[in-house]
Image (cartoon, rainbow, N blue to C red; front, side):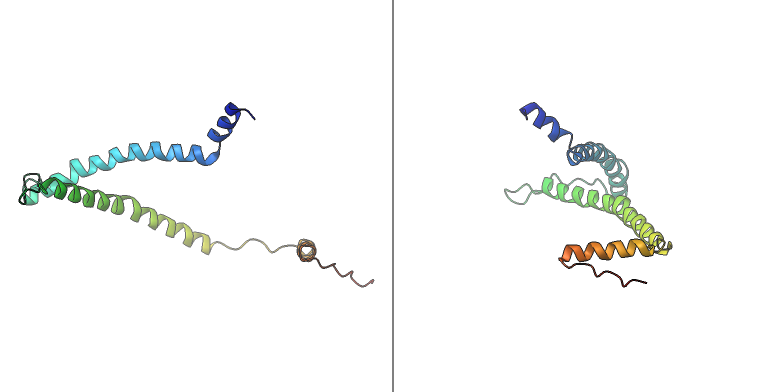
Length: 135
């Protein structure tokens, strides 16, 4: 197989395409989450506690204000993702699982299918099936 053919096979694998789609969606979703944090959450914090900026905090030679800002921004971002994405998704998954549990089970297998499955299992284990007694 040529290098171009191998590359084409690699690109066309399902998991590579799924990963690429996930990265693109994740990048665009980051903009949504950043907007929620910057345009909704941070102004509410500023309205309650003043300007939410610690960049001027200095501890001796250490300028820890930007670090504090980064930690607070991370915690806000994590809370937004958790409460607006993770919790609702967990709730939906639980509802779907509950719905699947309440649905009736599939119809029982016919006797001939059960017999074929037993024969298959015996052949896999190396045993020979016992012929039924003549009627």
